[in-house]
Length: 302
Image (cartoon, rainbow, N blue to C red):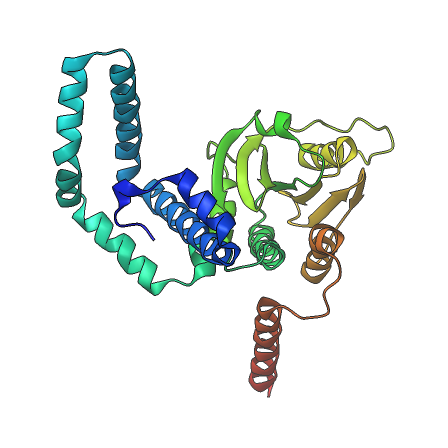
């Protein structure tokens, strides 16, 4: 269609599409591939030193355009001369990064490249299981903890009172946050958008007179945040190791592992994404593991 890239004219291209409507299919395919490659390049570049270089190149391009508009001939000549040889220099300097990007392009599926290889529903379920594992671990060691799940009502003002983390959810990270006498253990960890957004956050305390006097600061804070927003808070008692959950200003005390999973899945997954009859792979693995432990105990008892 076009002899070379320099001969490309967007206006002529559009007029040609109008005279040959069937070529719209190739136009859509063309745009899709370009967008795909652009998104992939940005995603890869952000994880390497190339990203800083791209910012510098954009700045140089802007300066070059401005120097041409302002008729700064010497500056324009230097910049354009540099760009002629700059591409070759960049290919040499960033050869390892380019090779790695091309290798990833050849080995990855389209869904993984765009970061959608796992549905948000499944990821939320997986995150809940990770939180439950961490909570049970802290309950066994009587490590006090307070974990808040942000829902529809945003609690950015609460997040800003703590230390921003923006980490992937994992049992190890959650347990380490609440290790006694560490900088982040005193306060709440906030989970938002499937990430541990912040830790050591200060929550509003419930001051209702009908709250049991034996409840500590963590429990009062959990009730307080659940009353002022639709957030759900999970508390591990430092004194007893018992797990409680606060929702809509009500505290459910001494919640067992299975009940905790059911409550969190019902409110964070089912309420958001609808019901799901399929049992997740992680749940099956958990059941198989529990069955195996039960069989081993029976064998030992015999």
